[in-house]
Length: 431
Ligand SMILES: *Cc1c(COP(=O)(O)O)cnc(C)c1O
Image (cartoon, rainbow, N blue to C red; front, side, top):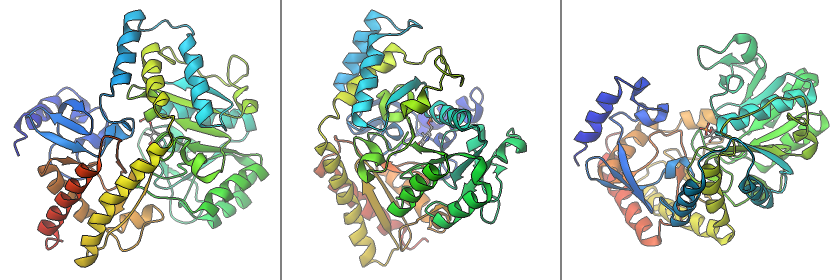
């Protein structure tokens, strides 16, 4: 397969765009090779600058749950563009999307629109601190909440150690306020509350983790987070930027029945345009300016075109059976590969929820970040390259989730699984 044009574009971009890309994972650093530059997308396919066509399992990292270039989303964008692009003033459409979001995720009583998932989580953290008067935040290792200063923090060693920054440019004074704990580990949360309980403003968690690969929580773990925050006057923040409208229409909250105080949304909610949303209990949201003292604002927040795209997509998610179909097709893909791996003694584990799925070259399903690190990452990279050469586009990192859309029908899935088995045949003796 020829990818010369993509390679040349990347070389040129490096002179003008930092790292040649506008978001780091796009640079293919963790799998090696040069990123593909795309120019068109339709249904479940992406088309690159060299004329290649790929079956896409990234879906723009989530938004394309009904496939690329959805007709209703495109018409809504066109119609709104004809009426006006931005007013910097309220519109009726914002009211409509707010009601729609609330009807899908009932724990949200009031909300605010912003321009990215990062802005949504950042605003949740400020609001939690402003509401409780407390300073510390608990997050979990391997959960990604956008590039917010307080949330780009990993643990030192040991339980409930005060965080050290993940990136230069984040003052230690700030990262010290973030406690980072292992995912799915109730005991470490218990200890953190014993030690710092008076000063913990919030727990923020991906209630199904999608940014260290696809990792499901133990139900008892999520329930414990709910209980311990309620008992200590802390706020429970579910970061459903990835899982919202993706694992189920109402996100993880619908799947588990466990409700957050505040929820962050992004990705699907903008229909592929840059939108974030945060919302939750009215008693907390009333603390936001102009009703309350916690400041948060945005020049382009609730932008009419972005809102029209998000509304057009969300309206098409009314039928919940969509998520059963997505999950069935994801499992079809995974079990076909899984059966081959079992026969050949290749360690392989997998799971799926709605339109999101993950697999690991490991005997058992990882429960946390360390487990993922112990899976065969090198094998993932070879698998990724083999799939790419055969026109299947997977996320370019073992630490990402895969996404499936309603346009990935059973035939395409079976064909993709057969291709995956061919790739595994080629690489199984290399690692
Ligand atoms: C993508 C993502 C974010 C960040 O959203 P951006 O729109 O990239 O800022 C935050 N949290 C989770 C769980 C995400 O998957």
